[in-house]
Length: 348
Ligand SMILES: Cc1cc2nc3c(=O)[nH]c(=O)nc-3n(C[C@H](O)[C@H](O)[C@H](O)COP(=O)(O)O)c2cc1C
Image (cartoon, rainbow, N blue to C red; front, side, top):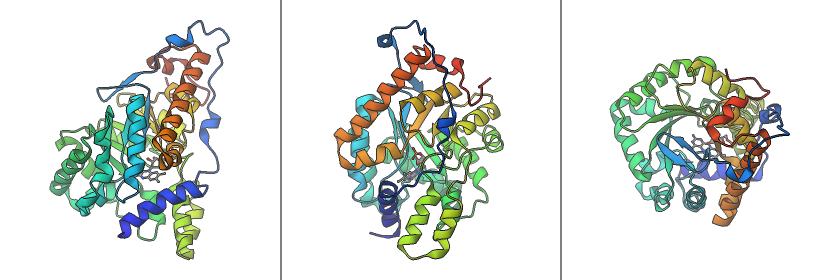
């Protein structure tokens, strides 16, 4: 295994074995109002939705996580089987490893064996800056082809880059790189944070580009500072171990990101709510705040390391809970959820 492969492996192992969540989960601060007279039949509730022109069985995405080392193939396969069964979206982790080592393509490409209705390719923002525009366009197409992606994600992960020992923390030129990529790539581009969140200001800058959507990737779930804290500990690297701890809770809460990104973009771009979603009730809260879809990473990770059955079960639970939450607020369509508002704040 080279350095990138072992890092990806460590991320997954640490995320499963240690508690890497932020100290507070902000979804607990969002309350939906109970409707004691829902006046709908629970079995008539339709949780399907449309995102980037694709029909989804539920407003749910398996958030970008892994690929690029041997064991990741099985994880992606189990996740893809669950995404197929429930017809939900799915992202793979950063595909840089397979560009560097083509024999690793299959660890991502396995998702093509499943009928996943919406697939997301993925690369870190610092990577596209270092490549330059022409090389980025070529590599983006390779990553898209690798999984037959419908959407291309550029991942912002500067918290992780800032606290890890081998971090690439040159963020200069990032906005321009994203802007040009969104102009010239035929596939829609989504900008995604990975746990530190998108602010009003950043969303408003992004809304002036041709990107197709924003995944706010806010704080409240997996903390990459926490993961890097534990990775540094394994290496007796006290310097980065301390930094990871200091920035453990850094970031903008996901529910706040939805409201701010929505306002900043006049609710014209689809907003994906990733960060701390643990169950179907959190999904309902995210949609009520104005998100088009919720993204789930950590909750799916451990089951996906076990079996297809475990991954399927986890999605089944979330889907069932979402339906129950919609029943309890008296809403029978995903598109009507935003009208009920939520106590964290109101969308409009
Ligand atoms: C092991 C692991 C690896 C991840 N790798 C990536 C990645 O390569 N690209 C990316 O955009 N996000 C990545 N993420 C971030 C997730 O997509 C998500 O934004 C974050 O974990 C917050 O969601 P959660 O609280 O449901 O875990 C990763 C998360 C985990 C747990």
